[in-house]
Length: 629
Image 1: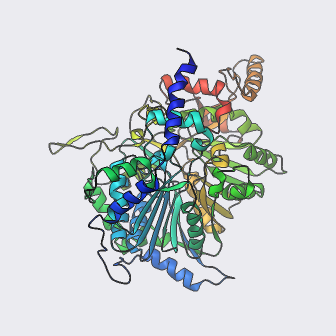
Image 2 (image 1 turned 45 degrees about the horizontal axis):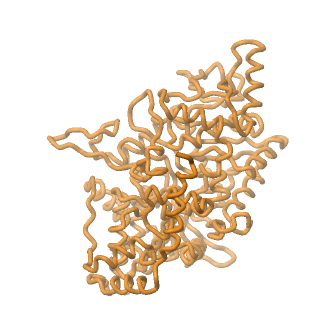
Image 3 (image 1 turned 135 degrees about the horizontal axis):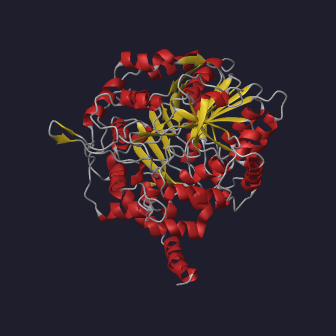
């Protein structure tokens, strides 16, 4: 069968879907059913809506009270620890008196997703105005759940951003149709993450609402980072959220075709059932932490800084409509200006080391300075990443990173010791074994927690494309997901921007920039911990083993890596190095580096598998799809 015949059913589906818009009568009918649902009355009638006091919110409110236009006061706290990041969210949600705004890229239906969603529903039921804006493609795939959310409380509003064909769900054929008919729109996503309470304090960074972003998955978790910022910066967060909430691509639930149909077909109120957690004891523990002032002080409050200049930047939603307009690229533009002014050092952490053309040009100019600033990069190895296709393009450009930009690259190990310590702190009462398999304890078997492989993959592949490559070693695995940058030890950014072409041109991104050396030092120390030998391999130049021929091979590799296609030369300019026992960490440009480090291959710990082959193929042929990946 020819490709033309294969495309025909997809094009027919596109025409059908684009023609099936909801009528005003259908929208009014669904709205009336929602409004008439019982059990939507507020459970609290106090002025503060029965809020639970939180020292985190109180500190932000005090900062606002002390601020003047000339001298603002803000509070900032780095949330590296996953349990602190979760407890802070719960504490703030329970303390909200007026409003809660949430913006995210992924919202799963595992324990984390259920926990945070239930906390928000309970806040709405006591009278707080709650708004949730989630990117449609990777959030709330259950129409029945959205039906319940639509009726849970008149104070709870939910919108999905950029829905495919105005549906909440995207089955495989619609996924294909979205690519076939409207690829540019389909490819542009809202990657922002924000939780804002009472317009006074917010949390932003890399974490989505899914188990593995908070160390609750027993076999694959992310090393991630958030920042909590309170004070006048809360107003900047509120203004950004309002722009997205009111944008034409943010669609209310009753205007989504499949949700509207579900509401109108079942007028019986579904109610809001209690969450069904895989591990209720762990949920109860973090909820107790969130209400314990001493715990919050020890894990968050004692490290909270009072600073003056803190800014929340977000790309405008217009970026998705006209990405060439510079005023839509607010965060991206700020990050480029931060980089351009570097004099001594840039410390960068990104899961995907695939740079946009603009970033490449900036780093190239920095490397030509006299003297050039030191550039330290923390990123994923192939053994750690769950985005092997993106890693393949990073692998392709190793020569350029080392020679033209002067990068010192450290790739996270899949069993990084610091990540394992963080997991153990977040799961100190758990019984799961090190491989993530269920184990028998007291005659009962503890089940596996779902991860992001539950999400649909390309053309309905059940998400297998998102699973990491198989390893030769066993044990719990970790992948880097944090996105942060520190410049000259003076200011730092923590946010959602991956410093790659997708973040530059397609996704909308958000983050906080803190202009304070103390905060910059904290972020720098956190990133550098992930580069220690027990946590990462070092990427450095290979030594030619055969005179002349080795130099010729390097020359061919150089030419091959610069080709947009057909980068087929298998011998690379650089490889991964492991420190030798008894040696202290050294930079690759140290004369004694090769005495203390030994090469361990281009893809250490990765077993031979189809994904290893795919990585080589994408290195050879995939340079033209950086923006898609």
